[in-house]
Image (cartoon, rainbow, N blue to C red; front, side):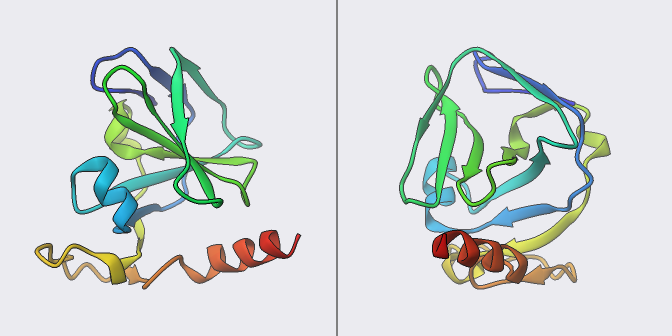
Length: 145
């Protein structure tokens, strides 16, 4: 699987993950993408390899995660949650090769922050007002230290 930013200054290669995709409707994902959601693919570094070329710039809007983007064109590329140090989330929109093998959507998250003008299709996929329960449990353990 391969990916890049819009200007190709940053590229990545990795082995595909079988974890279901998360579609995130949080306000931050909307603002950084200019779209109603971002599709995220989790890659576990212990099971999959991931390499980058170019320089990934980063920023944080909260203590929970650091977001990666291309410093030249601004494309959203990744998110690293601090409670999951061995997992990185890749923006599925950055996939340029191998996308046909991606898993299906497993969660709609932060539907409570969804843009009012966007209607989530009735697809039978779980919907959560915030993070899904499994992620919430990991986050709570991390916060307790």
